[in-house]
Image (cartoon, rainbow, N blue to C red; front, top):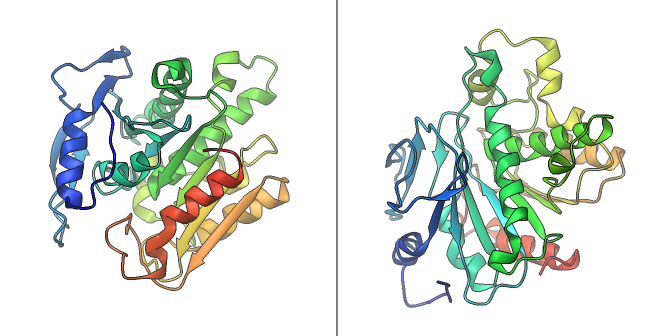
Length: 311
């Protein structure tokens, strides 16, 4: 069950074919979903306005799942994909399935995460989204041999709010690592590289994406949890190499988020590369910016991975 990119097929056709061949794993039980059913409610993005037919969104997710896409010739590197959605939904196709044709054609194994959404009214549930991401990394590493992956070549790629999830769960694991009671399995969940595409990073008033902060922290956020969930303020030297990409005309998530993260990484001596583009807006993924320079970002990301030995 693999894939070689077919230039004669449309992206929709390739996505549908790959999704039908994919494996869905329920992370709560680590069992394969034989029915191929996704946890939660799935529907077409109401803001969809292009020729791209498959633009599904997930909400009301009651159990975390991984959708696994396998290449014909694995290169040994796996990528956990964390789609965005403002902590209100998971953009299943635009920032998940749509990536599969390009990455699989180059031998990368993809794991698209469908994660539980936070419940700000229930304080104890704020972290369940990050727990799902950590569980996904642990599952991938534990089963790396099954997919012909090298355990030291497994990274994460997060979009928008998914970038906040990626950077925050890495910070949380690094914090566990520093503590005297850290658990080996939690340290095992640190990815080997991190890609952040137009990410939400800060929870501060003048920088954050208000919708993401409200969904995560509620209406009564405190100075303490604003600091706690601002990824740039919690970076440590154990953070893996990072690739950042953002557009200056992003009117949804300010470019300042990526700038703050880059500064935070550099100050801690973490290897980081950042690409800024004049135009592209927000949420372009791979199919809505093909006529702009930023449309070639996947090749940039692959070249960056290659330069760090992740190919």
